[in-house]
Amino acid sequence: MNFWKAERTVYPPLFRILLGTILLIDAVFSISVNGFIFDANFNALYHQNSVLNFFRENHIVFQSIYIIFLLLFLIGIGGFWVKGIVFLFSVAFDLLEPTALTWGDLILGFTLLYFIFADSSQHLSAGKKHRKSDLEKWIAKLAVFSIILNLFLVYVSNGYSKLTDSTWQEGYAVYFAFAQFQNFENSFFHLNAP
Image (cartoon, rainbow, N blue to C red):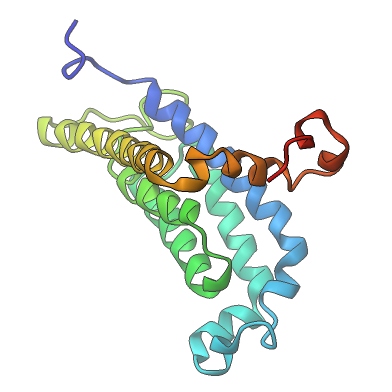
């Protein structure tokens, strides 16, 4: 069967479940640090923007609503609308704390944006299943290929960076990656430290 024309009906629902589980775990465990992250003394932007101040002052309610939508996303209820709201919550959290934003958050944002249009409710879902038109199927397939392309570009850019960066070529980057672990200084790998 041709790779580009093959039906991928089970992969988007599996991806929805995995992504939803990761986001849910992150949301639940981040509740304990929200008091620090949303502290007005930690982020000067809160003094300049009343909307950000509103979310900062009500971050528990905001986080609780996000967790409810993540649960709906995880079990496949709500389709397009729930996926869109999860995307908006993800972007809102990125905007609320730009100092904690990483490249992984940006990739997650693009993935969630593309995933809005992916058909992930036909299998492994408690939501209603309905027949898709040819246009909807084409858009869903395009969304899945956009996610694949997004991840491909991440790996290509990382590979190019590793090929051209002197710290990777000399082997120091691997050392710096492992040096953050406890007891690394006492390990066998620390013998030839830079």
